[in-house]
Length: 453
Image 1 (cartoon, rainbow, N blue to C red):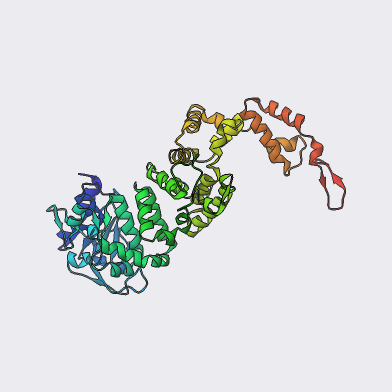
Image 2 (spheres, one colour):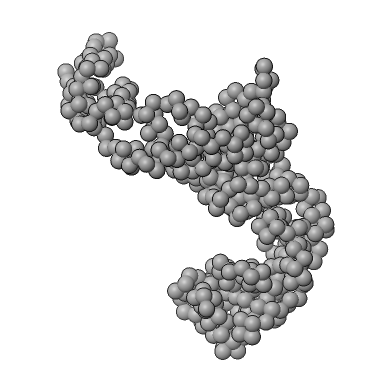
C-alpha cells in the first residue's frame, strides 16, 4: 500500500477507535474512482476540531473557524475537517455561519461539484455517493452539486475550477453549469488575484492548457481575467511565416504542445506574442514592429496583476523579451551565442523556441543547432571565470565609471571567442584598446582629475 494512503488510513482508524465517524473525501476519492493515484488524501469526521487535536498531538488548527486541522505525518501533512453545513455566503467566498454536521451526506451537500462530492470508506473500501458523482465521472461531465448559480455565488472561484476540471479530465460542462458561468463570468473579477493566479497556473500546467483556454474563452471568463490574451483573436499574421492562422490559433497550438511545463514556461508561451495586437500594421505585408518591447510591458502588467513573485515575473519577461533572438542565432558571433546560452534558464528559452516553431513554420533547424551547442559545450566554456575584473582595472589606473562595463565586456567577448586564455592576455588587451586618459573625470570646479591623482 502507498505510504501516504496507509497514513491516511491510520488517521481514519484512530478516529473510529475513539468513537467517531471518519472517511476520505474530495479529490482523492474522485481520483481513486477514476483509477488515478491521488496526490494527497483528505479526511472528514464528525469529531470537532479540538477532539481531533487531542487525538493527534502536534496538530495545527489552520482553519479552526471552518473545522480544519492539519495532522502531521512522516509522509506529509493530512487535512482533517469536521463535517459541516455552511450558512449563506456574504462575500463570495466565506460562509457567514459554519455549523458542524452529523453525517457525511450533510457535509457533501455544501461542496462544489458532484465529482468532488464522493466519500470513501477506506476500511470497507466502499464509495458513498449522495450526489451522483460516479455517474458523472462515467459520463465525463462536470456538474455542480445543487443549483449552479447558488454554488458560484458562494465562491466565484468555482467557475475557474469548473473549467480546470473539465480541461484536466477532458470532461464536458453540463449545460446548466456552462450557462451559469457564462452569465456570472464578470463576477470572477471579485476573486483575489492570488486565487485567480493559482487556478490559471494549474490550467496551464496540468496537461490540457489548450482545452482549458478554449473553455475559458467559450465561458466568457478569458476576457475577464486575461483580456490581453482574448485580444489575440482575429489578429492576422503573415502567411509565409505563420500558415497556421491568427495569433490566437498560434498561441493555442503552443499551449497544446506543452510538455509538463514549469509555470514560467507556460506563461511565456501564453504571453510571448501579446504585443502583436497593438503593433499590427500592414506595410507591404503584415508587420508587428516593436511587438517584443510592447509585449514585455504588457506581460509585466499581467504578472503584476496576478501577483507573481519577482523571480517568476523576471523569468516570464525574459522569455518574452528574448524569444525573437533565435532568428539571428546563425549570424551571431560565437561570443554572442555563448552569452545567449548563458542566460538563466536557457532551457526554457530553447523550449519556447521549439514550441514557437512547431506552431508556425515548423522548421526546427535553429532549435537543433542551439540545443546541440548547449549540450556539447562544457559549462565552464559557456560561463567561464572572468579573466579580468574591476579591481584589476583600478590597479591599472582606470577610474570606475560607465566605461568599466564596456572594457570588461570587450575582454569577456574575446575570451568567449577563444582569443584570450590568461589574465595577462586580458590585461594586455585592456592596455591596447583603452586609454587610462579616457577615464578622466571633471570636478565640479571645472578642473580635470585623472584617476590616481
